[in-house]
Length: 433
Image 1: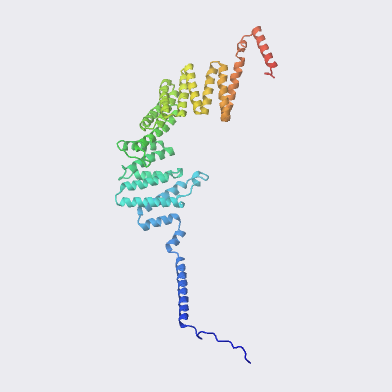
Image 2: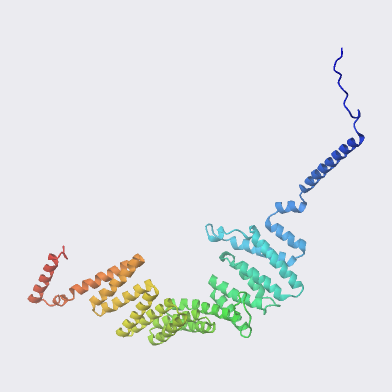
């Protein structure tokens, strides 16, 4: 009957009141923390009315609303005007034209935001009378729209710098003027480009202003004006109106010499030399080609030096001075060979060969044509190679028959016997088939 009796466990029968309270407090804290997280998550998911409208509206609408809300009414009016001008510009474009493939301005968010940023800054500066800042911001916009399809916008902002009453004689406005001349030159509107460049030259005569890249504006304006005069001379040259072309090129050359850039000065002298050459005034042409040679030597530019010698040789040849022409072309060949100007070297050899050919020195001509052919083979220029092949063959043929050419004209029996004997030898050697 003595069964094992289980001993009661030690400890209180009821749970400790303090432990229960701690557990309840812990659960309450966790619950409140979870509740706060849910509320914060719910609040973060709520989108404001402004954010909804930004997603719903177009980029154009958002930009315009922001400008009006921030009080930049003039900037809003200008952007609205430009958007309308863009629509009017694209409306008459024919299907398949380049204009049709351009994205409308009101769909280009980056450009709209850039205009908003700089125009609002310009308007803010205008309120305080900071006219240089106004022009500076508009100049920045002119630079930004430098792509060919955006040149109309670039010109708009450049004009807004130079055409205003206040600040139009400031440094940024003057730089905008030369930028505008360069933009008109790209568009081919040469008279507009000339007017702007000439105004810029006048404004920079006494000033020491530098452009944004650190270059004197007076030099940049003169370079632009040289290029404009050079382009203006193209039409008279095509019409063989050399007097008109020379007047324009002289004006351009004057600007080139004042630009302090010998590269441009060489271009100006070279074009004048070529024009005098075309007009038949080889003496004056040679004077300008000599100037080109001097400038090329100073610049140590072998390519320009080669072009100068080639043009000089042509003028000398036109005067009938064969020996001086040959010496000039020999110098051209030496310069080209020493500086690796392979195309120029081929031209020099072919020119030398042509001169010897015209003077009936066919063996000598054949030597130079053959040298030109070998260089053309190294270049792999098919057109030049074929030209040299024809010249070599022609010169070699003349060198073979020149001994018997005198027997063709007389009809004497002795001359005929010599020709028949020569032909028989050629057939025996496999020359004739």
